[in-house]
Structures are given as C-alpha cells and as structure tokens.
Image (cartoon, rainbow, N blue to C red; front, side):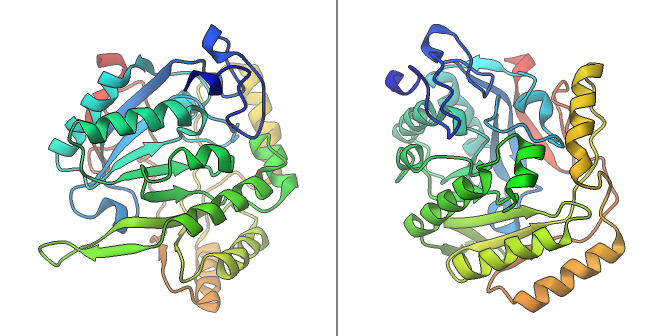
Length: 328
C-alpha cells in the first residue's frame, strides 16, 4: 500500500508528493486517513437510502477544488481527525448495527489504496452490507481496480463535459475525459442489481451505478450535453440522478479565499434554481426518456447545508450522527 503514497500518483493530477513523509498532495492530505463524520443519511437517492438510511463516512480532503462545494470545511480546509484500520472497522460496525443499508464512502479518491485495505478488514470483521463509493469520478482506472470486488455500489458525479467549466470551477481541465472514462469502467464492471426489501415496500440497489449530475444555474445546455452522453453510454446499464438543489454556500473563510471563489463562480449563476429552470429540466427528462432517472422536487429550503464544526452537521431530518471528528 505504501508504494502508492511515495511520489503520489493516485489521482490524475500526479503531484508526485511523498505522502509517506507527511508531505501533502494536491488533495491537502498526507499518508494519514482523516474522517470528519459518520452517520445514517436519509437524503441519498431512494435506492441507496431505502428505509434504514445510507451509512455515510465523510473523508477529509479532495482531488478537486469545486468553488461551490457544500462540504468545503472537510474537502478543502482539512477538518477531520486521523483514524486507523481499527477505528474504520469500528465506525462500519456502528453503522451496520444502527441499521444502515450500506457503507457509503464519501470523497475517498485520494486514499483508495488505504481505504481498499480498510474495507477488506471490515468485511473480515463481519460487515455484510454493501460498500458504496461516492465520488467525483476524477479517478484513474488503475486506482479503481483496487476497489473491484470490494465496492459493489458506485455513486459517481458527472459534473460537466466542458473543459472550460471544469478548469474554472474545479481546477481540473481534464475532468471531462477522466470522469467519463472512470464512469464507463464502473458501468462495465458493475451490472445493476436491484432487489425488493423483505417487506416489499422498498427497492434497494445491491450492485450497480447511479450517475449523478448537478444542474448548474444558467448552464442548461451543459446539462443537456451531459444527459445526451449518459443516454448514449449509461442508459439501461446504470441509473441516473439529475439534481436541482444547487445552493450558494455562505462560506466562512479568509478574504483572499473568498475572492478566489467569487472569481471562479463567475462562469455560472451562483443562485438557486428557478421554477422555470425546473420545468425546463423536467421537459428535458421527458425528451430523453431514460430507463431509470431520479429527479427530486424543487425546493428553496437551504437548511440541509452542512456545518461540520457541529456534532450534527445536517438537519435532524436528514441525518442521524454516530461519529464526529471532534468527539472521537
């Protein structure tokens, strides 16, 4: 495992930092795995949430720099605490014992070798529910291969197919090519299996891919392009989740960071989605006629925005905390 952290090339940025020696990569993380929060989450797609909730584990750090990131405290500003294999296994056990439908690893792309080993240990210690990989899809095929057979549910984003947008918003002009290749690999290696629960009242995914796309206000044509790509490459082989909850984040950061964010966000309209956009998106969905597409009802509620300084980062309706970085 350590070899992947020497002159680190885990993600497509190939920053070549020696993370074993406590140097940080572009992800802002070294060899230590940090977690910010773990708990039951009831806001994922129905096939993931089901009844008991998805057992989310939020990893600190990220290989992207999304200017609008709602999880910026942990993805970009380092909030979280170090955990070892034993800690990780215990967190998984807490989630499974609490009734989680799956173990949902959120943003772990910069620690795939270590997380793969930790998942193996968790399975050996009695974790039987599926593992779900929740990521930006900015990942190399070589790293994804390490998760093959360990992760059965894949929840990647396809944020954009525009290099211009990805360069300004995420700091990754190669994102469209990298993410589309990663998603193709996920679909090819993980056929969809959806089963009914024992009560018969819910369907849940045991294996397969749900590709997410967040509509960016003012970028209707970009969403149309993404859906067109998904229709050609994912329809009937994966599920689609079109998200309309883009929400401006009230960032609490130094002035210099806020200025950089403001500049990056100029490429979109940093606001809530309008009712007219919502209707246009529904027309688009109807036109493409996907075999399985999830689309949520438009809402102006912003209470779901997380604050990871709190033991309950989300609303009580959205999540049930079981572990927090500041209460380890």
